[in-house]
Image (spheres, rainbow, N blue to C red):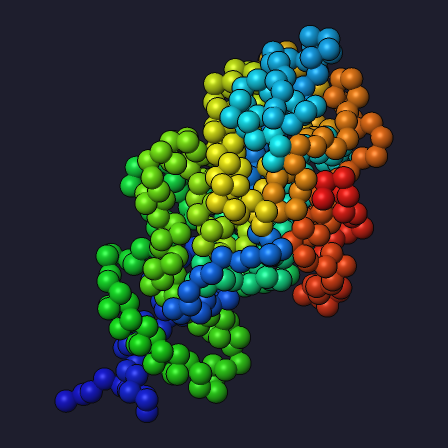
Length: 449
């Protein structure tokens, strides 16, 4: 008669084969790879919303490049081939005008500002994405097709590293998908975002990776955790201690269990618990419900939320697509987000930035569209120490480039970190040991703060 092999701590070899390898790699928990290594939450800790100047960040990233000349920097006096189809309207702030198709957002004009002096020299998607989301222009060898493709850490990753989690919710969350340039680079997986994949506007939406696999209940999850703890002791023998990857994987497992068993985290992502009136105000569409998800996460203690919304690359039928599809979503989603945060007393401690990777060509192309244009872009900023009702800078009569003192991604980065209380001159070290400052020679845009 033969007996299964067991080590001195009672772990059978069969259990190691069944649980050890899958558990070590985290496959059985089906969490995104970028969840790996985030700092483990403190079990059972009560989330208390931060007060004072402890500021969080929401990035509403309009991927593809919003046509800001038609949205936030209209040129009604320009020739027809430049000015486009839309008219500007007044907001609640004197002298601040935006597109006529944003009436809800216009009612919040006293709470946001527009940065019209913004410019950079990258008019390609991947290059400009990296520049906007890190403050660093990519090198000559940059590969935009990598995921993530970061040569420098994203803003969200730096915030996650410097500020850490509050309670059980992840400190950095990407809603809808992970943008290719939203990664941590040399900060490592502990600064990577948790990715809430899926469209929160779909009926019955739930974040897949917060659901136990195959409807496993918490009791069974805890049993599996106990078994994995025993496997971990087996792994920590001298032969495995040299394998740093195994140690890292145990952190992955811990975070996975914490997320799946945390009532706080599940509640933050449970958008169905919102009142129908609130969901309707944000809009029952992808961008609106993603903005609502961002508010819920910030309220629960997440430090940085990045919402990535697609289809802003309007080379064809720019005006029809903006009017019928994109601007209605931006109007209700962003308008409700500003109003909602303000009414809840959270806007002072939540900085909102809405932006794309570049603007679009001032001259309309033969397809009634506009093409990529890095030299002129307008950014939307609200809350978190940003003054409301202001327009900073201006472009020339055709919207081709800023007049006067230009600002760029380095200055945006410096301003964000100023508002969040992070020292822009602090250095991190690359894998080769090379020191790199958080901000690359940017200046705080004093007119905004």
